[in-house]
Length: 228
Image (cartoon, rainbow, N blue to C red; front, side, top):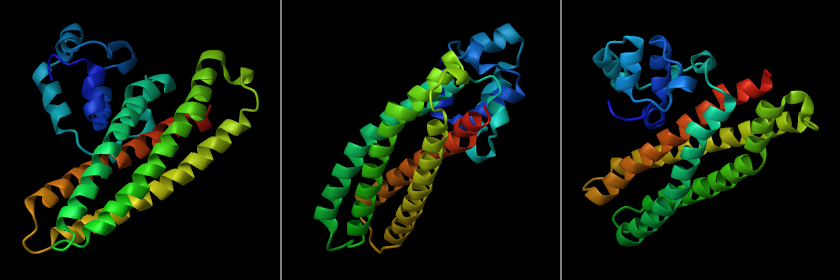
């Protein structure tokens, strides 16, 4: 972590944004520096900083005010777009792995059918959702930040898009809840295969990534847009 650029440290765990604020670190000016460079230039206790960053875990404690020195473009480019790329890559892996495990263990673990189908539906919906964000919403937000709101034609359509995407997020959160219930039911299966158990843990990680991503958009980026 010491030699990593700040933007990599945050991308790994967005809950660390609150720690940066508490230490008086301005992300926008320090994002390309390492933790060592930041601590040295600001006279900070490096190991106290690393300890706090390592212990940060609950992204739901974040508030829009914790992103005080972030621009909307930085939120998009340093958190949301990398998340999109990760989710696109994850889609292929989870759909293929889910199919394989269902074929191999459907007799011993019939609940794999439900988990496979829930995953497929959720990941297809998410793929469509992130394409829409990248093709319409994100370019509009960047345009506003570069040119100013007064130069954006029909800016009400931007707010309409935000409302629609928030509704999509509600649907995605419901999908995540269904998947988590399915995982819990699978994990209590007697003599559960280790490969399936490991896959369920990976799916839990995927669900956490999706919830974090939605949180940053709903509670930070979209609130910034609405309050402009």
